[in-house]
Length: 134
Ligand SMILES: CC[C@@H](C(=O)O)C(=O)SCCNC(=O)CCNC(=O)[C@H](O)C(C)(C)COP(=O)(O)OP(=O)(O)OC[C@H]1O[C@@H](n2cnc3c(N)ncnc32)[C@H](O)[C@@H]1OP(=O)(O)O
Ligand SMILES: [Co+2]
Image (cartoon, rainbow, N blue to C red; front, side):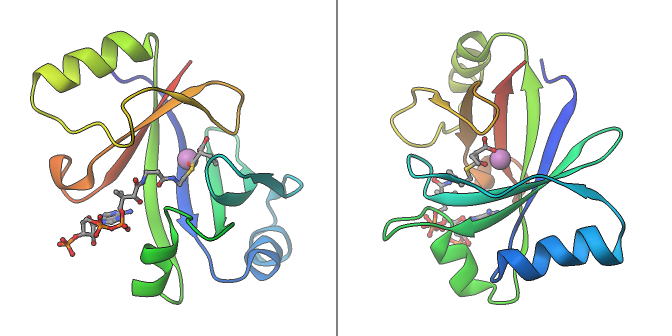
């Protein structure tokens, strides 16, 4: 069902500092910051040849990543995002197998203007999984 690794996301306490680390220390290409109020985050993408790293800073009062940052004040790896061809078919198959789809179960439009869904970390070996329709 899952295809390519679209991105690995890291929650960071300071987006400018994290962007500089990837751009100036590691020599990577980075995007401009983008705030996504519907997701409660501001994001910078690190653009690698084979995948992306998503640097995430909480945005707004109800950000879904605030509790993670509170527990991990230095930041840390937050989720992995896999591509799927048909996100509704993937969701329905995963639900039938007992996996918990987060939120109201309906895809939102993600940072790449494509539908995304999240799966509970306790159902995937302690790793929050994002699915993005390719
Ligand atoms: C940029 C847009 C988009 C894209 O296109 O790429 C994004 O990536 S947006 C990214 C941010 N959005 C989300 O993360 C949405 C989905 N997430 C959630 O709904 C919540 O974060 C959560 C996964 C339900 C966790 O909620 P939280 O309030 O932090 O904690 P809980 O107490 O409910 O957590 C239960 C349990 O799970 C553990 N946990 C929490 N987050 C993670 C994580 N990232 N990885 C692994 N485990 C995680 C948490 O520690 C709790 O464990 P116990 O303490 O053992 O109960
Ligand atoms: Co993501």
